[in-house]
Amino acid sequence: MSQDAPIEASLDKLGTLTLRLSGRFDMSVSCIRCGSAHIMLSQGAKTLRYEDHGLEEWDSSLVATLYDLERRARELGAKIEREALPERLCELLEMAAIPGNQAGHQPKPPHGLVRGIGTLTTEAWMEFLRFLEFSGNTTLSFLDLIRGRSKMRWRDFWALMQNVSVEALPIVALISFLVGIIIAFLGAVVLRRFGAEFAISYLVGYGILREMGAIMTGVIMSGRTGAAFAAQLGSMKVSEEIDALQTLGISPNEFLVLPRMITLVLMMPVLTVFADLVGIIGGYIVAVAMMGVPSGQFFTGLDFVAGPNDFLLGLFKSVVFGVLIATSGCMKGMQCKASADAVGVAATKAVVLSITLLIFANAIIDWAAAHFNI
Image (cartoon, rainbow, N blue to C red; front, side):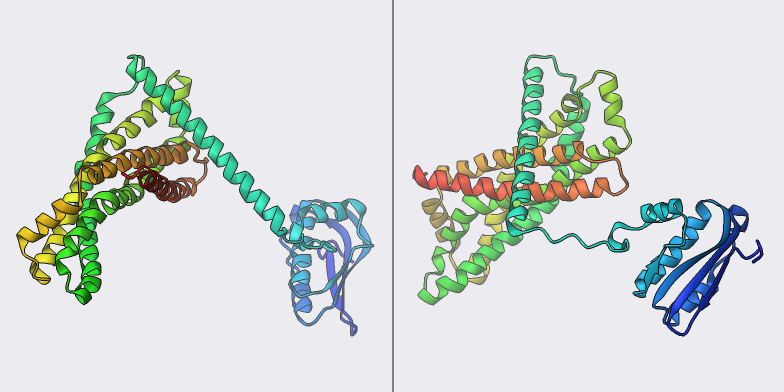
């Protein structure tokens, strides 16, 4: 056996592929490819067996070569016999093997139902605790702002306010207008059967002012602004800008989170009022232009069914939604990990969390309003 061929392969009639190891195997001969061994494996080898014919010195290149052969053998369902290999070489092959593909390794049994429920419950509880911690830190930063001890930059505050308010008007107007039209059409299909088309204004006014205006604005801002907050802060976390602020003794909550929180909470009621107006206009067009409802009757019915309580309830919801959206977006951005895809993951989690909390909060507010007959 020459040193130029430290590995020789042969396949017998019983399907046993024998690899004979000899001489010296290191980086100087690592370019040797065991092409014939791979071919023999593909020809129906049932067993991969090693023979030591005076193997002298070897390094990691031998481990890599044998690991590649064994990986191919496992893919083809062949058995592996390592009895002739040095003990240290066997240990390194075991360490290099993928856990799910190790010889004799049994896959882990799937988690049971109880264990899965427990894991999800624990994760939800930890997420709730992180949410409370982040909300508490933000509240303390807001108290420092009131006392005049905050390091928030007002220039950033006004830039964020423009982004949250004026630049968000087109998409809010479009969605609200379409929602108003949809609600009117939905009511028309049912009310026309009873000859009560005039009641479309009841449905539009009550639905828009009390529910859909605030909810649709919240959903829009979750996808637009909440995700943007998470992406911005996540990018800062990845580039270590937030660590730099902490090194300088500047609180990231005061410098980054607080202006975003305040702007969104202040602008959500304004956007909700705008959405209410545009949504009612959409319902008005359907009722008057398509259903033949007199214009005066539409506004009279609107004033009859929708009162100040409905309008104020929608505004209250918008404030709560603003807090939840800003908190979710900023929290997920601050929790972003330092990896290539972490920013996108943080933005996705922010949208999912904010919409979930938004719907949950809306259900609680509606329950309280019904309980107190508001």
